[in-house]
Length: 112
Length: 115
Image 1: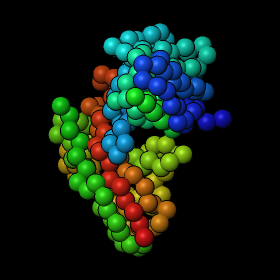
Image 2 (image 1 turned 60 degrees about the vertical axis):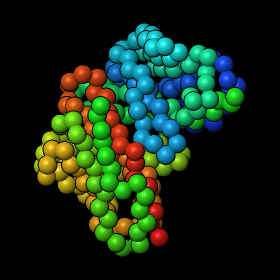
Image 3 (image 1 turned 90 degrees about the vertical axis):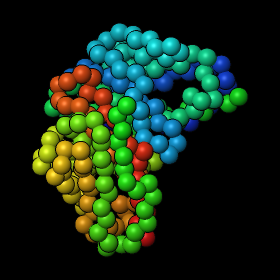
């Protein structure tokens, strides 16, 4: 079993839809959870960051962590064509002396 | 804003050539990383460095080496390029271990084609 599993997509939705992106993981030591967004031919950039379990909201984006199920989600409300990108989840046991473990990314396409 | 600059966006090299990929960050970050990104395989860590003159192997170091002589600069070296090293290479930096969120800041990538 891979440490982090993420459906590669592509996920195609119409503008205005609610999008749900998910990752599952196997390492119960993971404590910090991140979502990166990567536009075509660009480097990833941090979108959301969550520590331990719970929800975090930032505008149209909500990150959710369920450590009991080892499952994290990113919800995008009122999706826009500009949200079309690849979304990578990432996680780490701690922020000290450790490296991030990335999912392979889900490609999202939002059509006008 | 943190800026991570990769000197070459696109390179075409021949098998057996020595290839240098340069990365510079301007925010005094201690930690720097080199990843490669391939379709279906995601991001894979090649090497990273916690500080000047320090280096650690990542998940796929074979065929690569690195150099970090100055804090702001981290170089990836392909001693003898092979076709299976055709990939997108991403450099990233981070403030320091145990500080803040551990967010990685990425450059725009260097797409290397080895013929």
